[in-house]
Length: 78
Image (tube, rainbow, N blue to C red):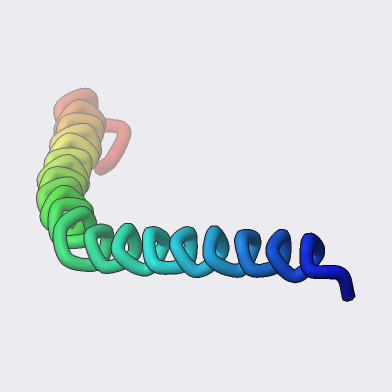
């Protein structure tokens, strides 16, 4: 190989080394900071979904009770 080609490969290798180091630091930041926030947000949303689920069951129960009461009152259910 010519001296110029070796220099180009050396520059490319150095650039790749710097890029790899930058990527490693970014991954470290994501693991350390962002995943914690995502996990916290997911936990909050899970609690909200559970509340909505409970409310839906209550609404369904009230609906069933009101239909049964209506049927009993009109004499259809007896």
